[in-house]
Length: 362
Ligand SMILES: *Cc1c(COP(=O)(O)O)cnc(C)c1O
Image (cartoon, rainbow, N blue to C red; front, side, top):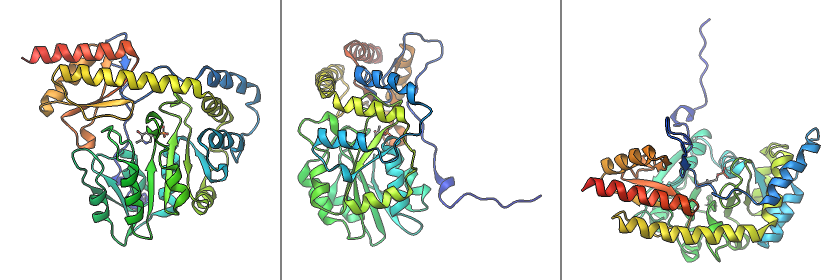
Protein backbone atom coordinates (compact mmCIF):
# COMPACT_ATOMS: atom_id res chain seq x y z
CA UNK A 1 0.00 0.00 0.00
CA UNK A 2 1.22 3.50 -0.81
CA UNK A 3 0.98 5.87 2.12
CA UNK A 4 1.46 9.60 2.25
CA UNK A 5 2.17 9.83 5.96
CA UNK A 6 4.00 13.05 6.79
CA UNK A 7 4.98 14.68 10.09
CA UNK A 8 3.73 18.17 10.83
CA UNK A 9 5.51 21.06 9.03
CA UNK A 10 8.74 22.06 10.74
CA UNK A 11 9.47 18.71 12.41
CA UNK A 12 11.87 17.53 9.68
CA UNK A 13 13.78 20.83 9.94
CA UNK A 14 14.81 19.90 13.49
CA UNK A 15 18.36 18.69 14.03
CA UNK A 16 18.10 16.29 16.98
CA UNK A 17 19.66 17.61 20.20
CA UNK A 18 22.94 15.94 21.17
CA UNK A 19 23.82 15.68 24.84
CA UNK A 20 27.36 16.07 26.13
CA UNK A 21 29.53 13.01 25.50
CA UNK A 22 30.18 10.81 28.53
CA UNK A 23 32.68 8.20 27.29
CA UNK A 24 35.88 8.07 25.28
CA UNK A 25 36.74 4.71 23.76
CA UNK A 26 39.78 3.10 25.33
CA UNK A 27 40.39 5.78 27.98
CA UNK A 28 39.77 5.13 31.66
CA UNK A 29 39.41 7.59 34.55
CA UNK A 30 37.37 9.89 32.33
CA UNK A 31 36.17 13.25 33.63
CA UNK A 32 32.96 14.55 32.07
CA UNK A 33 33.01 18.32 31.75
CA UNK A 34 30.59 18.51 28.85
CA UNK A 35 27.12 18.92 30.37
CA UNK A 36 27.44 21.59 33.07
CA UNK A 37 26.60 19.16 35.85
CA UNK A 38 27.33 19.80 39.53
CA UNK A 39 30.51 17.76 40.20
CA UNK A 40 29.38 17.15 43.79
CA UNK A 41 25.95 15.79 42.89
CA UNK A 42 22.79 16.63 44.80
CA UNK A 43 22.32 17.28 48.52
CA UNK A 44 22.47 14.12 50.67
CA UNK A 45 18.92 15.01 51.73
CA UNK A 46 17.79 14.62 48.11
CA UNK A 47 19.40 11.17 47.89
CA UNK A 48 17.64 10.11 51.09
CA UNK A 49 14.32 11.37 49.72
CA UNK A 50 14.84 9.24 46.61
CA UNK A 51 15.45 6.18 48.79
CA UNK A 52 12.37 6.87 50.89
CA UNK A 53 10.26 7.27 47.75
CA UNK A 54 10.61 3.57 46.84
CA UNK A 55 7.97 2.67 49.42
CA UNK A 56 5.27 4.59 47.54
CA UNK A 57 6.07 3.65 43.95
CA UNK A 58 2.65 2.04 43.42
CA UNK A 59 0.94 5.41 44.05
CA UNK A 60 0.36 7.97 41.34
CA UNK A 61 2.28 11.18 42.03
CA UNK A 62 0.78 14.53 42.93
CA UNK A 63 -0.78 16.29 39.96
CA UNK A 64 -0.57 19.82 41.34
CA UNK A 65 2.98 19.56 42.75
CA UNK A 66 1.80 21.58 45.76
CA UNK A 67 4.58 20.47 48.12
CA UNK A 68 7.37 21.27 45.67
CA UNK A 69 5.81 24.56 44.58
CA UNK A 70 5.46 25.58 48.22
CA UNK A 71 9.11 24.75 48.89
CA UNK A 72 10.26 26.73 45.84
CA UNK A 73 8.04 29.66 46.82
CA UNK A 74 9.36 29.71 50.39
CA UNK A 75 13.01 29.55 49.39
CA UNK A 76 12.75 32.22 46.67
CA UNK A 77 10.03 34.37 48.21
CA UNK A 78 7.55 33.76 45.38
CA UNK A 79 3.82 33.16 44.94
CA UNK A 80 3.35 29.35 44.81
CA UNK A 81 0.23 29.81 42.67
CA UNK A 82 2.28 31.19 39.82
CA UNK A 83 4.81 28.34 39.73
CA UNK A 84 4.58 25.42 37.28
CA UNK A 85 6.83 22.36 37.49
CA UNK A 86 8.01 20.36 34.52
CA UNK A 87 10.17 17.49 33.36
CA UNK A 88 13.26 19.66 33.29
CA UNK A 89 12.90 23.25 32.23
CA UNK A 90 12.92 21.75 28.72
CA UNK A 91 9.31 20.71 29.23
CA UNK A 92 8.35 24.21 30.36
CA UNK A 93 10.01 25.68 27.25
CA UNK A 94 8.11 23.21 25.04
CA UNK A 95 4.81 23.99 26.80
CA UNK A 96 5.35 27.72 26.30
CA UNK A 97 6.03 27.25 22.59
CA UNK A 98 3.11 24.91 22.12
CA UNK A 99 0.73 27.34 23.83
CA UNK A 100 1.94 30.61 22.35
CA UNK A 101 3.38 29.97 18.89
CA UNK A 102 2.28 28.18 15.74
CA UNK A 103 2.41 28.31 11.94
CA UNK A 104 2.92 31.88 10.70
CA UNK A 105 4.41 33.06 14.00
CA UNK A 106 8.01 34.03 14.71
CA UNK A 107 10.06 33.12 17.76
CA UNK A 108 13.28 34.98 18.49
CA UNK A 109 16.44 33.48 19.92
CA UNK A 110 19.95 34.90 19.93
CA UNK A 111 22.97 34.00 17.79
CA UNK A 112 24.54 31.64 20.34
CA UNK A 113 21.29 30.79 22.12
CA UNK A 114 20.41 27.39 23.61
CA UNK A 115 19.55 24.74 20.98
CA UNK A 116 16.22 23.84 22.55
CA UNK A 117 14.67 27.22 21.61
CA UNK A 118 14.96 26.43 17.91
CA UNK A 119 13.79 22.84 18.42
CA UNK A 120 10.64 23.73 20.34
CA UNK A 121 9.85 26.54 17.91
CA UNK A 122 10.05 24.26 14.87
CA UNK A 123 8.08 21.60 16.75
CA UNK A 124 5.10 23.95 16.88
CA UNK A 125 5.37 24.94 13.21
CA UNK A 126 6.54 28.47 14.02
CA UNK A 127 9.59 30.14 12.48
CA UNK A 128 12.78 30.56 14.54
CA UNK A 129 14.39 33.99 14.04
CA UNK A 130 18.02 34.29 15.02
CA UNK A 131 19.33 37.73 16.04
CA UNK A 132 22.96 38.77 16.43
CA UNK A 133 24.75 39.04 19.75
CA UNK A 134 27.34 41.71 20.55
CA UNK A 135 30.65 39.88 21.00
CA UNK A 136 28.90 36.85 22.56
CA UNK A 137 26.62 38.97 24.75
CA UNK A 138 22.84 39.29 24.36
CA UNK A 139 22.09 42.47 22.38
CA UNK A 140 18.76 43.99 23.42
CA UNK A 141 18.70 46.46 20.53
CA UNK A 142 19.25 43.66 18.01
CA UNK A 143 16.37 41.68 19.54
CA UNK A 144 14.05 44.68 19.46
CA UNK A 145 15.03 45.34 15.85
CA UNK A 146 14.26 41.68 15.04
CA UNK A 147 10.70 41.88 16.38
CA UNK A 148 7.77 42.07 13.96
CA UNK A 149 4.01 41.86 14.37
CA UNK A 150 4.44 38.08 13.96
CA UNK A 151 6.78 37.77 16.97
CA UNK A 152 5.10 35.74 19.71
CA UNK A 153 8.03 34.68 21.88
CA UNK A 154 11.51 35.95 22.69
CA UNK A 155 13.89 33.49 24.36
CA UNK A 156 17.01 34.57 26.17
CA UNK A 157 19.11 32.64 28.63
CA UNK A 158 20.63 34.85 31.32
CA UNK A 159 23.39 33.82 32.01
CA UNK A 160 23.60 32.44 28.49
CA UNK A 161 24.76 28.96 27.49
CA UNK A 162 27.29 28.36 25.90
CA UNK A 163 28.81 31.84 26.28
CA UNK A 164 28.49 32.19 30.08
CA UNK A 165 27.84 35.92 29.72
CA UNK A 166 24.85 37.79 31.11
CA UNK A 167 23.14 41.16 30.84
CA UNK A 168 21.94 43.33 33.73
CA UNK A 169 18.41 43.77 35.02
CA UNK A 170 18.07 47.25 33.48
CA UNK A 171 18.69 45.78 30.02
CA UNK A 172 16.19 42.98 30.64
CA UNK A 173 13.60 45.52 31.77
CA UNK A 174 14.22 47.54 28.62
CA UNK A 175 13.71 44.38 26.56
CA UNK A 176 10.46 43.47 28.33
CA UNK A 177 9.15 47.01 27.86
CA UNK A 178 10.15 47.16 24.19
CA UNK A 179 8.81 43.94 22.67
CA UNK A 180 5.49 44.03 20.81
CA UNK A 181 2.27 43.68 22.85
CA UNK A 182 1.61 40.21 21.38
CA UNK A 183 4.96 38.83 22.50
CA UNK A 184 6.03 37.04 25.66
CA UNK A 185 9.62 37.29 26.96
CA UNK A 186 11.04 34.02 28.29
CA UNK A 187 13.98 34.40 30.69
CA UNK A 188 15.74 31.05 30.90
CA UNK A 189 17.44 31.09 34.29
CA UNK A 190 19.08 27.66 34.17
CA UNK A 191 22.27 29.27 35.52
CA UNK A 192 20.69 32.08 37.58
CA UNK A 193 21.42 30.09 40.76
CA UNK A 194 25.14 30.66 40.22
CA UNK A 195 24.81 34.44 40.29
CA UNK A 196 24.90 35.97 43.76
CA UNK A 197 22.08 38.47 44.28
CA UNK A 198 20.30 37.79 40.96
CA UNK A 199 16.66 36.63 41.14
CA UNK A 200 16.55 35.37 37.55
CA UNK A 201 13.92 37.97 36.74
CA UNK A 202 11.36 36.85 39.37
CA UNK A 203 10.50 40.40 40.43
CA UNK A 204 10.07 41.41 36.80
CA UNK A 205 7.63 38.52 36.30
CA UNK A 206 5.61 39.95 39.19
CA UNK A 207 5.65 43.54 37.96
CA UNK A 208 4.72 42.85 34.30
CA UNK A 209 2.34 40.57 32.44
CA UNK A 210 4.63 39.61 29.53
CA UNK A 211 7.57 37.89 31.24
CA UNK A 212 8.09 34.21 32.12
CA UNK A 213 11.10 32.85 34.02
CA UNK A 214 12.26 29.22 33.79
CA UNK A 215 14.58 27.50 36.27
CA UNK A 216 16.03 24.03 36.71
CA UNK A 217 17.23 21.49 39.25
CA UNK A 218 19.67 20.08 36.68
CA UNK A 219 22.62 22.40 37.25
CA UNK A 220 23.46 23.82 40.71
CA UNK A 221 21.04 21.41 42.41
CA UNK A 222 22.83 18.43 40.87
CA UNK A 223 19.67 16.61 39.77
CA UNK A 224 20.07 16.43 35.98
CA UNK A 225 19.15 12.75 36.07
CA UNK A 226 15.86 13.43 37.85
CA UNK A 227 14.50 15.86 35.25
CA UNK A 228 12.88 18.65 37.25
CA UNK A 229 12.48 22.26 36.22
CA UNK A 230 9.98 24.99 36.92
CA UNK A 231 8.56 28.21 35.59
CA UNK A 232 7.32 31.43 37.19
CA UNK A 233 4.80 33.41 35.20
CA UNK A 234 1.77 35.68 35.32
CA UNK A 235 -1.32 33.79 36.54
CA UNK A 236 -2.93 33.89 33.08
CA UNK A 237 0.11 32.18 31.54
CA UNK A 238 0.29 29.54 34.28
CA UNK A 239 -3.41 28.74 33.73
CA UNK A 240 -2.78 28.29 30.00
CA UNK A 241 0.30 26.08 30.42
CA UNK A 242 -1.49 23.87 32.95
CA UNK A 243 -4.19 23.06 30.41
CA UNK A 244 -1.76 21.02 28.32
CA UNK A 245 0.73 19.88 30.98
CA UNK A 246 0.47 16.13 31.56
CA UNK A 247 -1.25 15.58 34.91
CA UNK A 248 1.46 13.18 36.06
CA UNK A 249 4.42 14.74 34.29
CA UNK A 250 6.72 14.47 37.31
CA UNK A 251 7.33 11.20 39.14
CA UNK A 252 6.91 11.03 42.91
CA UNK A 253 10.63 10.27 43.18
CA UNK A 254 11.58 13.36 41.20
CA UNK A 255 9.22 15.56 43.20
CA UNK A 256 10.62 14.29 46.51
CA UNK A 257 14.22 14.73 45.39
CA UNK A 258 13.67 18.29 44.20
CA UNK A 259 11.81 19.33 47.34
CA UNK A 260 14.56 17.98 49.60
CA UNK A 261 17.24 19.57 47.41
CA UNK A 262 15.77 23.06 47.45
CA UNK A 263 15.21 22.95 51.20
CA UNK A 264 18.92 22.26 51.76
CA UNK A 265 20.17 25.76 50.98
CA UNK A 266 23.31 25.31 53.10
CA UNK A 267 24.48 22.62 50.67
CA UNK A 268 23.57 24.74 47.66
CA UNK A 269 25.51 27.71 49.01
CA UNK A 270 28.60 25.55 49.45
CA UNK A 271 28.37 24.34 45.85
CA UNK A 272 27.82 27.88 44.57
CA UNK A 273 30.85 29.20 46.46
CA UNK A 274 33.05 26.34 45.28
CA UNK A 275 31.99 26.97 41.67
CA UNK A 276 32.79 30.68 41.95
CA UNK A 277 36.22 29.93 43.36
CA UNK A 278 37.18 27.23 40.85
CA UNK A 279 35.73 29.15 37.89
CA UNK A 280 38.03 32.09 38.66
CA UNK A 281 40.96 29.71 39.07
CA UNK A 282 40.22 27.92 35.79
CA UNK A 283 39.79 31.15 33.78
CA UNK A 284 43.09 32.43 35.07
CA UNK A 285 44.92 29.16 34.43
CA UNK A 286 43.60 29.02 30.86
CA UNK A 287 44.53 32.66 30.27
CA UNK A 288 48.08 31.91 31.46
CA UNK A 289 48.23 29.23 28.76
CA UNK A 290 47.10 31.76 26.15
CA UNK A 291 43.46 30.69 26.06
CA UNK A 292 41.11 33.62 26.71
CA UNK A 293 37.49 33.43 27.82
CA UNK A 294 34.69 35.90 28.50
CA UNK A 295 33.81 36.62 32.12
CA UNK A 296 31.54 33.70 32.97
CA UNK A 297 28.68 33.98 35.43
CA UNK A 298 27.74 30.28 35.19
CA UNK A 299 29.33 26.90 35.94
CA UNK A 300 31.30 26.68 32.72
CA UNK A 301 33.88 28.63 30.79
CA UNK A 302 33.90 29.24 27.04
CA UNK A 303 37.55 28.80 26.12
CA UNK A 304 38.47 30.50 22.86
CA UNK A 305 41.22 29.28 20.54
CA UNK A 306 43.06 30.90 17.65
CA UNK A 307 41.36 28.84 14.95
CA UNK A 308 38.78 26.14 14.36
CA UNK A 309 41.59 23.63 13.85
CA UNK A 310 43.25 24.55 17.12
CA UNK A 311 39.99 24.12 19.03
CA UNK A 312 39.37 20.75 17.38
CA UNK A 313 42.93 19.56 17.97
CA UNK A 314 42.78 20.63 21.59
CA UNK A 315 39.48 18.75 22.03
CA UNK A 316 41.06 15.63 20.53
CA UNK A 317 44.07 15.95 22.83
CA UNK A 318 41.86 16.48 25.89
CA UNK A 319 39.90 13.35 25.00
CA UNK A 320 43.11 11.35 24.77
CA UNK A 321 43.78 12.53 28.34
CA UNK A 322 40.32 11.38 29.46
CA UNK A 323 38.87 14.89 29.57
CA UNK A 324 35.53 15.39 27.85
CA UNK A 325 34.58 18.98 27.12
CA UNK A 326 31.92 20.36 24.78
CA UNK A 327 32.45 21.31 21.16
CA UNK A 328 30.16 24.24 20.38
CA UNK A 329 30.43 24.51 16.59
CA UNK A 330 26.66 23.89 16.49
CA UNK A 331 26.30 27.16 18.43
CA UNK A 332 28.31 29.03 15.79
CA UNK A 333 31.39 28.97 18.01
CA UNK A 334 33.67 26.53 16.15
CA UNK A 335 36.83 28.12 17.58
CA UNK A 336 35.73 27.56 21.16
CA UNK A 337 35.31 24.73 23.66
CA UNK A 338 32.88 24.89 26.56
CA UNK A 339 34.41 23.51 29.74
CA UNK A 340 32.28 22.78 32.79
CA UNK A 341 33.79 23.92 36.09
CA UNK A 342 34.40 20.61 37.84
CA UNK A 343 35.85 19.93 41.27
CA UNK A 344 39.36 21.17 42.04
CA UNK A 345 41.09 18.01 40.77
CA UNK A 346 39.21 18.15 37.45
CA UNK A 347 39.94 21.85 36.99
CA UNK A 348 43.63 21.20 37.62
CA UNK A 349 43.65 18.28 35.20
CA UNK A 350 41.97 20.18 32.38
CA UNK A 351 44.11 23.31 32.85
CA UNK A 352 47.25 21.19 32.89
CA UNK A 353 46.22 19.35 29.73
CA UNK A 354 45.40 22.57 27.88
CA UNK A 355 48.85 23.82 28.93
CA UNK A 356 50.50 20.67 27.52
CA UNK A 357 48.55 21.08 24.29
CA UNK A 358 49.50 24.74 23.90
CA UNK A 359 53.16 23.99 24.66
CA UNK A 360 53.10 21.25 22.00
CA UNK A 361 51.71 23.76 19.49
CA UNK A 362 54.77 25.98 19.70
C1 LIG B 1 20.87 23.02 31.04
C2 LIG B 1 19.99 24.07 30.51
C3 LIG B 1 18.63 24.04 30.75
C4 LIG B 1 18.05 23.02 31.68
O1 LIG B 1 17.47 22.00 31.06
P1 LIG B 1 16.69 20.93 31.94
O2 LIG B 1 15.67 20.45 31.00
O3 LIG B 1 16.07 21.67 33.09
O4 LIG B 1 17.67 19.91 32.38
C5 LIG B 1 17.83 25.05 30.24
N1 LIG B 1 18.38 26.07 29.55
C6 LIG B 1 19.69 26.14 29.35
C7 LIG B 1 20.25 27.33 28.63
C8 LIG B 1 20.54 25.15 29.80
O5 LIG B 1 21.84 25.21 29.56
